Length: 360
Image (cartoon, rainbow, N blue to C red; front, side, top):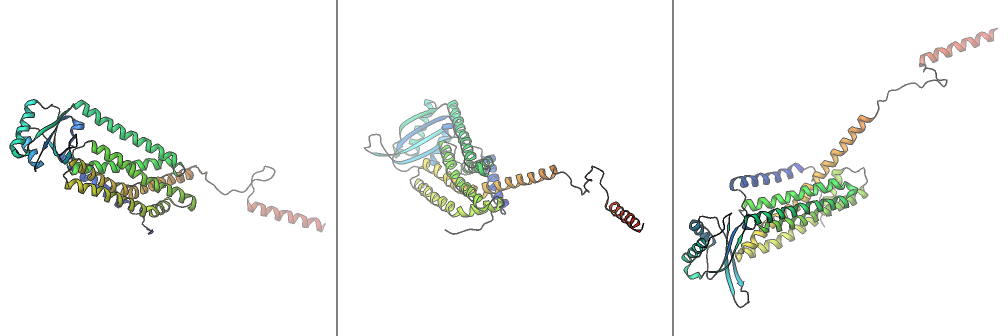
C-alpha cells in the first residue's frame, strides 16, 4: 500500500471551510425552497394506477396540480409483476401531501385528468391509501428518536472501547463527524428537491454505521500507535501518522461503495425508478461525506481538544507551583542564618585570638 505523509492537522482550516461552505449552500436552498415532507411524514393521500405505453411524470404533475389545486409527486415504476405473476405492468403513483383527505370527487377528477392526457394509456386504479397527518407526524418523531438512540449507543460504545486514549472525547468527536454526515445527507435532499421520506431515515442509519466503521479503524490505530510511539509523542504527530496509515484503506472502501451505489442509481435512472434514485443519490453523497469527515474532521478536532487539555494542565501546574527564592539554611542550633560576610569576619577574629595565645 502507498504511504502518505499528509499533515491533516495543519490543513484543518481548509477542511472545516469546505464543510462550512456546503452547509451554507444547503441553508440557502433550505431558506429559499423550504423542506418538503413526503406523505409518510406529513400525511395525505397516495393513489397508484396501472398504465401502458409512455407517459411524462412532469406533465402529469402540472396537470394534476391545476385540476385539484394540490401539490403532487409522481413516481413511475416500470415492468412490475402482477400479484399472480402472470403479467408485467407499469405503475404510476400519485402522492398528495397535505392535511386534507382526498375526496371521492377529487379522485374522479384525477382519473379523468389522466385519461384526458393519455387516452391510450388505459389508466386503472390499483390502490388508494390515505395517511392521517397525526400518524405521519408520529412516525416522523419515532424515526428521529431512533436516530438519537443510535447516536447515544454509538457514543457509549466508543467511550468504552477507547477509554485509554480519552474515550469520552473520542466518542464525542466521532458523533460530531456523524452529525456532519447527517447534515450532508439532509442538504442533499434539500438541494435536489427530494421530499423527506422513509428513504431519508434509511440513508441516515446506513451512513451512521458506514462512517463509524472508518472512525473506529482510525481510533484503533491511534491507540496502537500511542503504545508504540510513547506518551511523549505529540497528538498531532500521533493522529496524522494514524490517519495516513489507514488512508488507503479508507479511500478504497469508500470508492468501492460509491461505485456500487452509483450503479444502482444509474439503473434507477434508466428504468425511471424514483424510489431507487431517491435513496441512491443521497447515499452516494453520504459515502463521500463519511470518508471525508472521518479523515479530515474527526481527527483534527480530536487533536485540537487534546492540545487544549494539555495547555490547561500546564497552566494549572504553573499556577499551583510555589515561588522558589534562594535562602541560606539556618544553623544547626536553630539560630538565624548568618551571611557569608559575617562568617568570614568571624573566622578572622578567631585566627587573631589564636595568634595572641601562642605569643604568650
